[in-house]
Image (cartoon, rainbow, N blue to C red):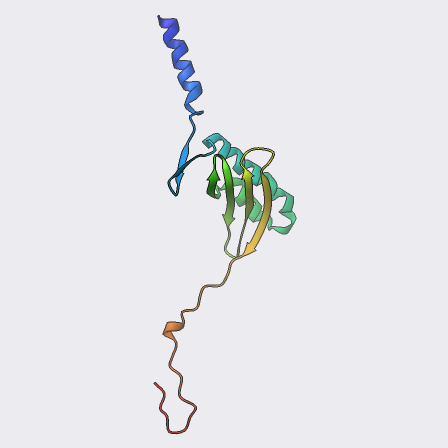
Length: 139
């Protein structure tokens, strides 16, 4: 009996990380990649960032190696869709964009760096203009 209990315990521990995770997208239930695969995806992104390391400052490459990135998934099928792994810096963002059947050879990847856009100017708070027509007063 004790032997059976130990085997059952090992089986449960081995399959604990293999239970599929699901996400609900507009009423449809899609299978997500596992947590282990998500970690592998981040490591793949780090290695991919090293291909453009000459374009990035060395201190930013250290941040990429040491800090956790922002990871966003957009699922459109079982383990299918888009994954964006990116790191934010003061002037730009850098990362890898994955598309297709995630964690397979059919997944495509694109390494990117983008400058951050300037903040949006709030035009509602501008000073009123004076009228150019003679005799008309501006607001």
